[in-house]
Image (cartoon, rainbow, N blue to C red; front, side, top):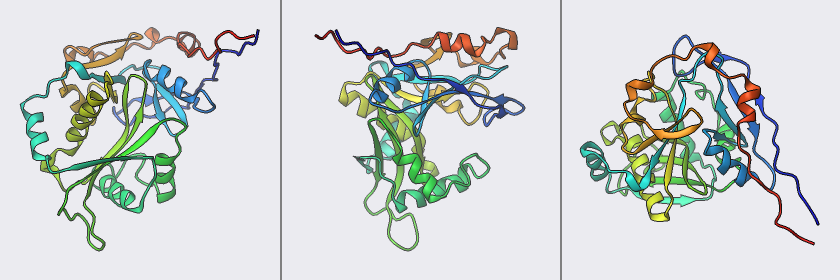
Length: 281
């Protein structure tokens, strides 16, 4: 009888560095490589345990004295947009969506640069050049899509006409859509494009019969991430399980360093996909 070993990736921890979300905090990430023939299974399994993908790496916050970063997802079947969100959808009804293989273009990069320069000029991605941008989009070992939003007659840049208003790099998981990174035209403030992209992903997931839309990390107390708590049917990964967010203010308490488990214990609790082949002769 032939047997194959279960997938056993190696986990590592980054060096501490200043937290991009909360002033005065230091962040540290637990990460592993995403590669090989079982990459999709590993991504699906770890995404359900609060991990996120960046190119060919899966990571999860593992800070020494803080547990503020909480992975968030929307339960598609239970989601109902509020009045403001319905207004956002109507305001952007003229957009046309297209989904393609993850391939970077100069048009996307031009929009990406306008977005960063306007919204995140001092962020960690501010110096990203066109080659690094292409790597972010194209280096994916799993099923990913680039979703573009355009509006006929909308001219956003000087020179060659462009009506590309928003872009999202999206992974297709076995139980949902994971919004890896999105960016949009910063001059269209009244359109609330960040909210619109999330609302549209809920509709894409609903049409595909996928139960969740993964939004990345929600960080209580962070103005950059606070908007995610405004979506209905939101769950967070806390205490090693998914649970309804409830009152967002209830999650703002700081964790005491002694209450945070050592890295070895955190890794020991991670469930890995069983890649053993069914019985054979």
